[in-house]
Length: 299
Image (cartoon, rainbow, N blue to C red):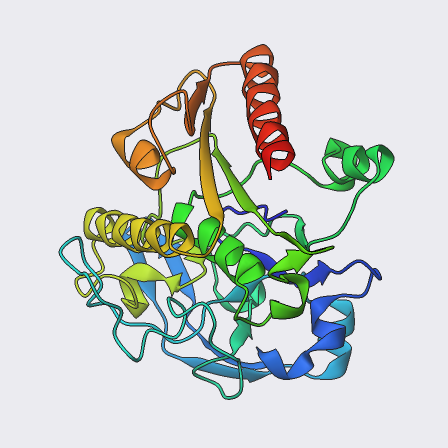
């Protein structure tokens, strides 16, 4: 389970034993970050200079919400890109975090001034769930709410990391189970279109100022480049052994775009679905469940 908005909550991600990712792998996280503060008044907005902050154990244990800035990357990944630059560690989703460029930097909304910020509910790593645990996880009262921008690439990138049989979660992804081959499925659902903005504080900090994804900092360019990253990740997941992607566009205002269809493993109403309301969504998940169930039986 990977809730995503403009960031992903990886620090408090829990495994089957209930322990957080940060408690298991503190070396995967960079606790010393450099931030820029957005300030606005009646005359406009501007970014203050870099502010380097080292977060001690007290802050990590009592103030951090679990969200992270992404690993080092390259702003040369555009709609015409077909390869991943060697310094785009984030897009190389099997990268083992071992130094500042390859670690996830802790998000600190107190350092970014008036930049919009939203941290979603923490991830839930691969594990068997009973109905009660499943329903509680998606409960509004447990913090599962919609908020923030829509970084479609970030949600799918973390799905790739969790499902990769050769990555940091390889031990959760065996090739076989009881001698039967494992099949993996991503169900990628969104209620919106790519919407990264440029002054909001997201997975790549404030994009207008830092320009980690788009060299001009323009929100239109940023959305285009994030879409290119998303589709490259879609292709990479589909190239994993026995792995399929279902895409679901949820909500009357969220259309099933050509990119959503392209990201999926097939055509519309086969691997790509539109659900205008809750009733439609139930039907979609029933169809997906029946399809996955029949595939398991044939294996």
